Length: 439
Image (cartoon, rainbow, N blue to C red; front, side):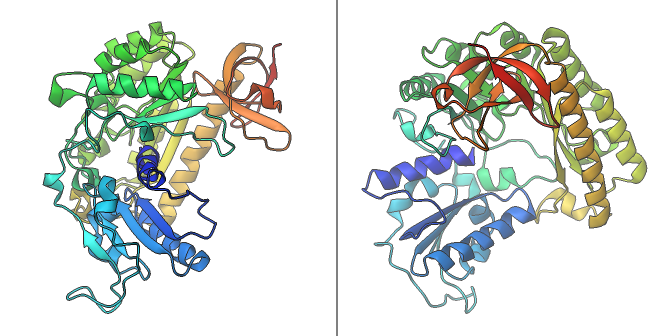
């Protein structure tokens, strides 16, 4: 979702005659759209600022996004930062710049190293989606390749979150759940198709909560998008298990456009930890959801997020979580180590897990993920699959994904870039299928 938002900011610059350059190039202005889900995301921002100023010492540096919203004073103290914009301000950047002239000096209460001016609204004032609901903004689309062939676009359909998971900062830095209208997003999808993209990824903080404040639903949106001409595929980026209804699964199963791929955050496989996390489901409900998908769509790709090292996760509870994960027909995992975030409920729990233990547990689950992905990939040997080929070439190979999120490698042929191509699966490695194009 940050990717889609960054492009919206890019468009503001392009409309004013700026040229967008590679981050490693010399630039007059740097805009850093930050994340703050983990502590490492915060430190990444500081490193990016330093790297930018090594390349362009006189560049004007703007920091926006979730880290800026959550800790504006801390961001403003980073040497070289000129402007700090919050979640409400980031889509109105040009209202806050003054000729992109660097400022220096100090400010009362912010310390001698202060450089940046701060414009950050309180989170309860953030109620707009990010652009006028009546305006068609093609900046919501994005080419994710680096070579110019349009393959996959990211469409932001929802923002904010009304959940109160004990470890999460997102409600504090993104505000309440909100969405544009279905009609607006249908227009967006039509613009995406006209721009030549073949696949659209629906993204958001809590996609399954789409439209609730307007009396609409995610299922309503999916049905409307299905009717848009020119889009070959839609992929749902992630959806909470308690919001992934059987009606949505049935619709995807019958759809000719929606990918047979579900990414369903789990976070932990022990009910004791899920309760402390304040998640809105238990392991039985999660299992029922995954099994229903597998029953209805036998070849569906099913991924999960898992957090290890949550406060109070004993060795026994971690083993319980691993056993639960092993028992499920998942195809891959995204594994994260718990990162304590200031102001969250879990930061008061104590019982912090040794970082070395977190690393060991992460490594174990990543091994589980590698095995599950390999086993799933091998299930496709001998099958002919539709693969959307991307244009990047590495070592005379090109890559793409099937509908059910199997990564496939083929011999490079630039004429097949951005094409849905029939590929015979002939081999498998840890995370990639080997394919031969069917002519």
